[in-house]
Image (tube, rainbow, N blue to C red; front, side, top):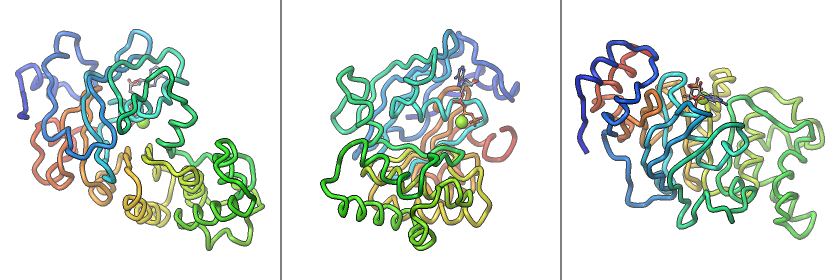
Length: 289
Ligand SMILES: Nc1ncnc2c1ncn2[C@@H]1O[C@H](COP(=O)(O)OP(=O)(O)OP(=O)(O)O)[C@@H](O)[C@H]1O
Ligand SMILES: [Mg+2]
């Protein structure tokens, strides 16, 4: 696919930051780069998302490949969280939000009315910007999903699952002697790793992360980034980030969103060294955002 840079787009670039896309411009956009992959874990086609009358995502089509780390970047309000939440139907819980388009996870239709949403959100787990441990013990935070889904037979199996999840989240050594103390008593970085352990405990296939490090200090951030690298061996990961350095460090492909459109999706190196689209270039060189 090649870039379609019309005069109308150019006009938009000059007016940035932040104008809603006029209806008549909406058709002038096309995604530059490689939105589709040969080994797709998730496929999204012609996705539109609305909040009431207001459209937040415009005709996005793309794949997320098996075991890739996909970074999603773009100026505030461009629809990154909206798009991410549509992948595991978290938008179902947002009042007034309407999602259109085709979404599949392997061969399953994510928006099939028969889809069990609890099961879906176990398969496509989510880690949020602000660590949100439940007001329960460290152990019970991680045990929550397995208990809900009933995926173990004996207490010893559950114990093992908790241990392994905390180990994979890189938190075990720090909490093994205080498993029954409140999760909320941990540091911010530890809480975020606890949330990752909680997500992993139900064996997700995909992990969605919405700015998982934005509330963390540089050391905790480095720890999470290292963890993302390790998790990518087993899971497919899509991460929204405002840090271009972070996107460059952790991801294989990067998707650049702008005013609800997917402008460019390419190999991460390419996006940061030789972006194809003018809007991507303007963003990564700090001209806006
Ligand atoms: N619950 C909501 N109700 C109405 N409009 C919303 C809602 N959530 C988001 N929006 C609007 O949808 C658009 C996309 O928002 P979204 O939160 O997805 O952007 P974002 O790229 O994640 O931004 P940020 O980087 O600031 O997190 C924005 O115009 C926003 O105001
Ligand atoms: Mg957001």
